Image 1 (tube, rainbow, N blue to C red):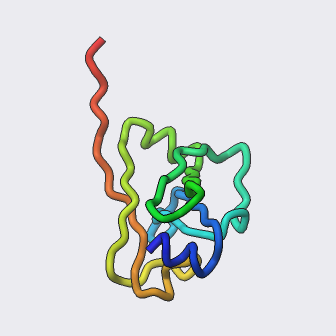
Image 2 (image 1 turned 120 degrees about the vertical axis):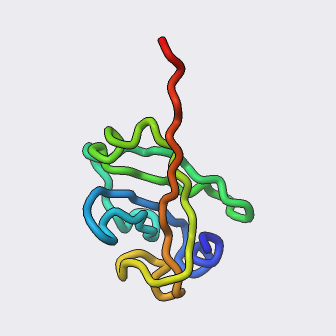
Length: 106
């Protein structure tokens, strides 16, 4: 889906904010369409096979504080999500799957 969206919209970015309902889903935008700032953390740059550039994945600092010990996995599922994210017209939605990263005992 990221390759399809990139072909249609150019370079992409994700932002994961806090909130309820679709506000807590990862949102995909054309790169630069969502302004990040001091209240955001660049969590990762996603390497996607077939794309020349990685896709930056930003998260709000408040969400990062809550999820910093969690491995976040970007996935796509059938069903309509938020109308603000680029995949919505495709009949799919991005979502986050997570795994707790266990810290070794001191």
